[in-house]
Amino acid sequence: MFPIMIDLSDQKVVIAGGGSIAFHKVENLLRFGIRPHIVSPKCHPAIEQLAADGKIFIHRKKVEWTDLEDAFLIMLVTDDKEVNAQMAKLAVLHGKLVVHAEHNDLGNAQIPAVLIRGKLMISVSTGGASPTLSTKIRNQLEHEFDERYEDYLDFLFDARQYIKSHIHDRPERRIWLKKAVETRYLEYPEEREYYMTELFSRYPAF
Ligand SMILES: C[C@@]1(CC(=O)O)c2cc3[nH]c(cc4nc(cc5[nH]c(cc(n2)[C@H]1CCC(=O)O)[C@@](C)(CC(=O)O)[C@@H]5CCC(=O)O)C(CC(=O)O)=C4CCC(=O)O)c(CCC(=O)O)c3CC(=O)O
Ligand SMILES: NC(=O)C1=CN([C@@H]2O[C@H](COP(=O)(O)OP(=O)(O)OC[C@H]3O[C@@H](n4cnc5c(N)ncnc54)[C@H](O)[C@@H]3O)[C@@H](O)[C@H]2O)C=CC1
Image (cartoon, rainbow, N blue to C red; front, side):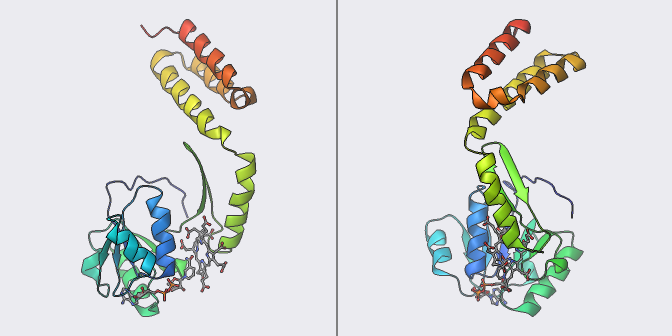
């Protein structure tokens, strides 16, 4: 498995199956601003509600290849093992990203447990050994990587953008980038202000 971050905002995501596991997958997608298509003859009431609110799309039918062929990412969560396996095989063959929620080896992608602190994202996966352990580790990391990281990451992002466009000497760039990850900049917002003030005065914008 190769870990990678993918921008799915302009991509079609289809979930085959509309039960409780599908609902869990939908909730996860929605927090990333992704509006999936659900293909399922019957759906969990919470999925029906999301469709009524215009947040997702439901196609009330049994899944067929034509429902999946223009998708970028496919999640197979019907309770029909044969259907899941058959669709996974076709989708992998056509080069799709495929999550097979029951037998991950029939797909080619898996969903990790995720901790989000603004621009910081920490993903934990056990390769299907124990989603419960992934969740436990994610929950432990929540304490070390607390809410302070949200503003801190914004500071790091702004500093780095400025450095990239104003410091052309690479060793000098590295000095500034390395300095920004010193703990005091996480702990004290005023230290971030001193850093930026010093950066602007050493490398004026014009
Ligand atoms: C392979 C994978 C495929 C995939 O990508 O879907 C998969 C497969 C399976 N999960 C099962 C069960 C559970 N899954 C969870 C929870 C999560 N499962 C997630 C991912 C993955 N699950 C992928 C591997 C990731 C990894 O290895 O790290 C998380 C991390 C992300 C997400 O789904 O959003 C999310 C936590 C998110 C969060 O809280 O943020 C809980 C609840 C809990 O533990 O809290 C249980 C009940 C306890 C248990 O059984 O362990 C079963 C057995 C089904 C059965 O009973 O038959 C299978 C199938 C099998 O392996 O047989
Ligand atoms: N990855 C994970 O975290 C987990 C995965 N699973 C697996 O997920 C699958 C689904 O579990 P649940 O949501 O609990 O089941 P469920 O019984 O709640 O829902 C099944 C859904 O599949 C739909 N369906 C059935 N045949 C279909 C078809 N031919 N085409 C389209 N949709 C169809 C049904 O209408 C229903 O909406 C199971 O295979 C289970 O083993 C289960 C637990 C955790």
